[in-house]
Length: 481
Image (cartoon, rainbow, N blue to C red; front, side, top):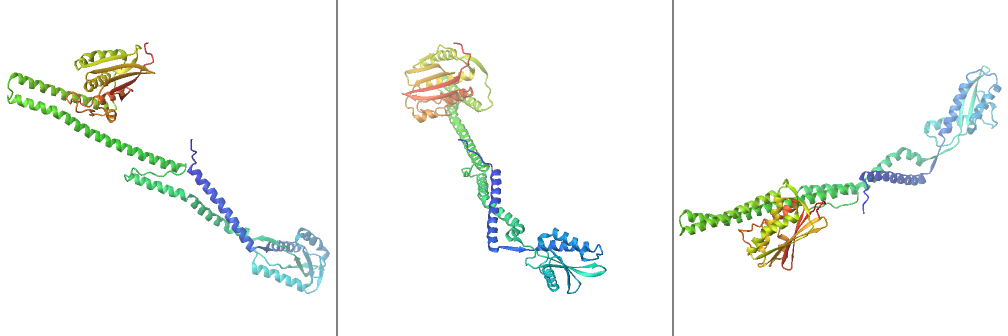
């Protein structure tokens, strides 16, 4: 099942949006509580501003002309009263003293009332300023006018209406943005805290691995880029650990190789030196004995040469740059040829070499010299370890698109662990029966390397006191039937 990966960028973006939404909700709740506790207040600032503007505009209009009578003023009063009808404006003309000469609307206003209203209006502006007027008072404004070459006083009155103001809204306008920003940052920090801790945990894990603790593993959390980083770091640690183990194994194998080669060379070399010293000191009894010693020394020298040849071949096969001279051959003919060549040798060792070859000719791509060496090593192994007398059988069959070669022989005292170790270099399953002069312990290992370089495989199976080696090679498609 494919796990859906949610990107960390998307997660952080979602966290930011969520933090903004939560901060806005919290701000709305807090302002609602504040509004409920503080309530609404009255604001007359707009009304006073409009009335004062109307009064000043009227003053400008009246100063443009020299009016003859009050009747000339009435059209102007009507225009302003209609334009500012919300404020129920009234216009009162006095003689400059306490006598009222004209009222646009008959409300029986006294000059003292007008003066007091004017004082209240001015006091409201002085005490609270033009920004906000929250206490109600009647509006009154006095304008000197010239009429029939005499100076009169025009009083303009109005009733300010109440504009209810929500204090919580005003509070939001002034402080809400700052509070919302702080809440967003705090909520974002809380939401992303676990991710930041996980990042620090990954960093600590990297430091542990860099410090040499290759068995340290970072816990995988979630399905985002951070979890991918943790998985890749753990994978990297596994690969480094495996590489170090392989290098240690290679070093151990090299040490074993040097030790085994030194051991296998030392024994025949010691014999050669011993026999040559006898001959050099003329300590032999007869010419026949001298000839015998020389023959033994020569045989031991050939053992050393065989060992060094096998060691050279093994080292060559270990190289990744080895090149094979491939050619197409009929594997049936090759197996028949090898069996014929080894038949006499096996008969001399009280062994019967038989074959069972399919009549269907199969063509394979092989390096002839290399492949023959692999077959020879397997047959020499059977010659060395077979129970005598017994039968050694070589078979060739087609298995699908592959050619299968079986070489089996009887043997005893072979255990399961021996079967698994047969292809290891310098391994001898039965050291008591094996002859170091004839067996270097590299034969099967070389055979396996050769077959694998050809793209094939070689396996072993032990059953009913018989060991069977199977070689599987790819057969060409244009086989001749």
